Length: 348
Image 1 (cartoon, rainbow, N blue to C red):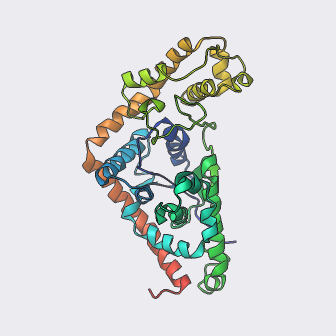
Image 2 (tube, rainbow, N blue to C red; image 1 turned 135 degrees about the horizontal axis):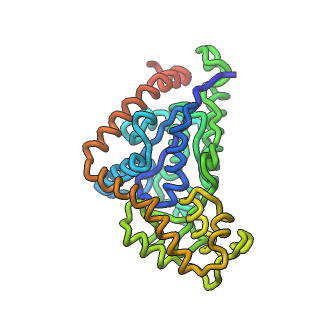
Image 3 (tube, one colour; image 1 turned 90 degrees about the vertical axis):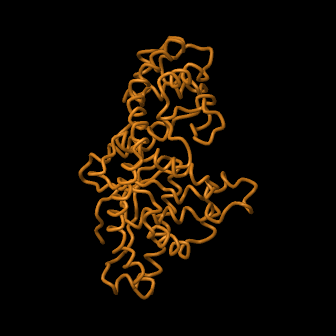
């Protein structure tokens, strides 16, 4: 059995404001993984994925800077993790094209997120939107990342990544053996689900049945990581609730999506669980609970937001972090890409 270096890869699109769902669902995990010395860590700003739908170029650049600033403000350390923007490492699209020729069209058509984003207009969306899961597989396998921290909504993409890796290994099995790579060239990447913290799914502040999203029309639906104290407090005060008091048991949150959401956010920010939150606040009205939640959110989020805003103003520093990270990423990717080209029969 081929042995692979334990390596984590993940990335976020710079296609909207970075909100609390991004932080609790992904970035917080990245920071905790960074402290696990058994893994090499690579974290990317996936700007090439962002342009599968039309982006204003100036806005895309500004959001790339903001996302990188958020990584750093949250605790990612360029001396411990490789941090870069995807478009600076051309091997991502080189391997992505090869994977386009390995993956099957039917696989792409079955992807749930493509169906959701394309809707009834699937004939008019970009080819990139259809093929981006193949590029996502290239993002991961360019570094033979053994693990990816994912939420439930990304498991289908990781399964596709494994399918592409397996098909490549099967299609080129003879060449892989002849060139001395053992029984497989690409690893079977494993998911890291809810690593380092309790599961949390952050929902809209105005509709507890929908995920918090940067694409929602109203900014009042989300907590942006660099909202100031007054705006953060305003959003939580106006967050939708119901007329009932908080229950004393988690079973009492069934059928109360907005109540469940606010309790989950409190638990995640306080590094506890929903039952412990209800042990403290069960029986209280939302007015009292929201006051405590605002105090907690301001204490936990605003220092990160202050640092984000400070870093955004130093774009030269952000650019240097990304350049340095891209150089390290290219150094890892180049030999693997050379081997892939040899395997498929390109002259190199």
